[in-house]
Image (cartoon, helix red, strand yellow):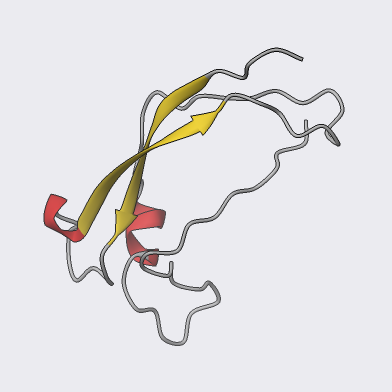
Length: 86
């Protein structure tokens, strides 16, 4: 195999729990490089690039501390990834 391309990747990370409407100051914009390579153990996989970040009302609720709710709050500073199967 040849060289694997690397591209700049931006992440929006929450500093802490948000009170009220989220502000730009509630978030950190972090840049890093990511290799454009799908893990070898993934068959029929596709690497996707997000062009826009949307924050709908459901997500805004999860940015604060939720008590007595059936859903969990987001954890500030926590990064997560997931696999989407189609």
